[in-house]
Length: 388
Image 1 (cartoon, rainbow, N blue to C red):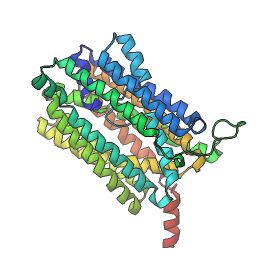
Image 2 (cartoon, rainbow, N blue to C red):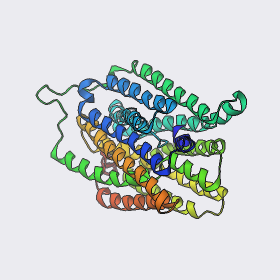
Image 3 (cartoon, helix red, strand yellow):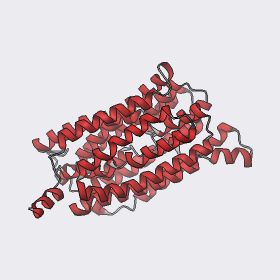
Image 4 (cartoon, rainbow, N blue to C red):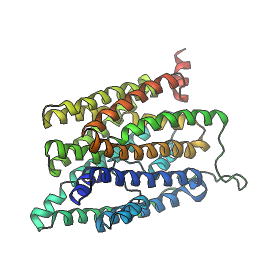
């Protein structure tokens, strides 16, 4: 929901394209800091307690949008509340989830379990996209003002995070991991894992920088300004987006079992960027949507495969740190990309973010394939031995 309406709401509230990008970027920066803390302390503090705390803080972001204080205060609350305008989960909780799930299943089911997890995320995201039409309903049926109808939604956003926090209280103890010894309060990682994590982090940073130009909030804002599409219609577009994303996760798990995790990541991600870069050249809203949906049918296939690959190439005790560090890099560069996108929209060309973001992602795909095509996860190495 926030991914669709955030940019439009801030525009209606009087903010410039630059400031809209700044608010989105600051929210992602807050999420990045939270991810640092989770990476270093969640296993010791307790994964369940960490998830509850993060959910309560996230509610602050919705509350900030609902009361809409003056700009410096809004930026502060967006930072504390880890306000997410990307349309996808980029939170510290998401990073911690990725460390928990692989430890609950054998290697052969790791990618499928993460795929199902992402299906549920995008299923919720599709319903949220439909909810983007609620301001119109509130205005027409209950005579709310345009800004007042949005504020009702953001109070609901804050309330939902309270429900999430309450739900995490019932999380199984199996999600926890043995705490590090007092003499080593943070997780220790092997030199080999450190090298792998460093290289993956650098590559994921480039991918996330490109992704920062392409948040749902900024893309919805682009459609709104380029074609004059109302929020109600955009809600249906992004509902379809998240349905395609959800289905693609299952397709990714099926494909990865046949061609491998790295091949699935690269060979689906690359064409999605080409579809995206064609969107600004579409002659009509209908053609732009077709190209955009083609992109969305492929772009998320690297998500469960990427998460599974990171978990596979490090030891179980290193997963929280590995997931946290790689997600931290993604959040930081998403924030940078979002802020830069606002500048490019305002000072260079309104469609520049789609072209720059797509180009960055193509470069990432080529570099990832060159660096990691020979480093196989355990299940692929076993499969290769079985065939021999």
